[in-house]
Length: 469
Image (cartoon, rainbow, N blue to C red; front, side, top):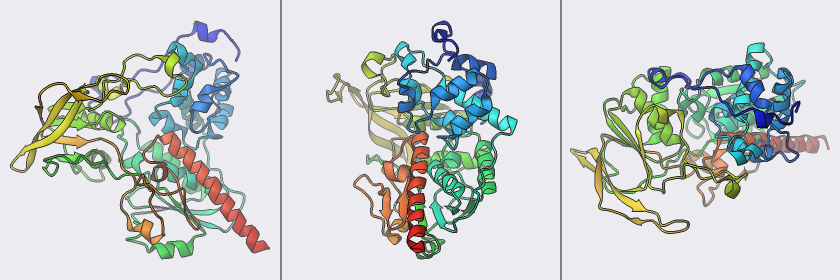
């Protein structure tokens, strides 16, 4: 920290988004490149606190004050090393993580936290431009074989860590290309897929193998998988969508949000032109108010929906922070994303009670206005039911755990009461990511991938010691 008073003199500034009318015409990243000068300026605001609450607020425990200091001093390559010391894929978290680290920043008490994500993105992009991000090939091979099932952030992280330890790692992915929800669930305007591909190239160069289009339990016998590997990592995600058991649920045009998102991603990439579901010219209602709902909104607007409404049944979130009550924890707050600048309408406190239709197709959502009586008070109806017209209804109301897959039974893995699987799933079988903890942040998935890699490495080391004895 070269200037201990910098946080008093420099205000928080972030790189702007591209103009809304411009980005609605494509699926490219909504953001702009972070100017290195801006990153250095903002890194100066870091106070290098004696207790780094930002670091504690990050599930990866990124050494944020360290790389802020290095960026401020212009030591970009050392900053990259510090960033990679805890995070395999900082460009993914820089684009997708909601930044609990920034909420935990001491400057958040003044609602002006350090722009941690922005500095993170500046570091990793500088690293790729300068050619500092290279394969890290293990010095030798242990001869141990590991199967990683699933290629989302947890699976990719576990695979990279284990490959770098010298194990022979094969990632099995049932889709045509690796990436899991990074590729098929997250829209390109949030994460362009070239960012995934350049990391896959690095992993292949390090020695990780990828087997795509392979659905374990259907295309490959799990018994054969177990026989051919010393350990198995299940990083299969938690993609079983939460249902709304309401009258009219079976009408055409009432769809899980993830089915819509994966179809749009396949269309944008050219893998499946047209996608499975289209919002073009339709009146779209999205039930839900989180990240998935916002992703649906952005896609529907880009497709040319005639109208889009996000409907949430909960209380309207507060628009202003009360940091003295919540800091350094993640506060309940109205959070807007880039897509909310582009169009559509958001409404809260509307409880859906039925889907209405004609000739088998949805025509509207029946809702009841609700009133919330304050902290801990039960909501109550605050008006008569009304019907909101809709030609397409997307259910973005969360996930209920892992899908029902013969793989788990074949490996002897029992589900938990939450619909997930245990972290220690069975003899030489380990779980990681959303399939263990439920749908969560990308930064949590990467942290989980690193943790499971440590457990697997210890298991394999114990096997080697036992054989040597």
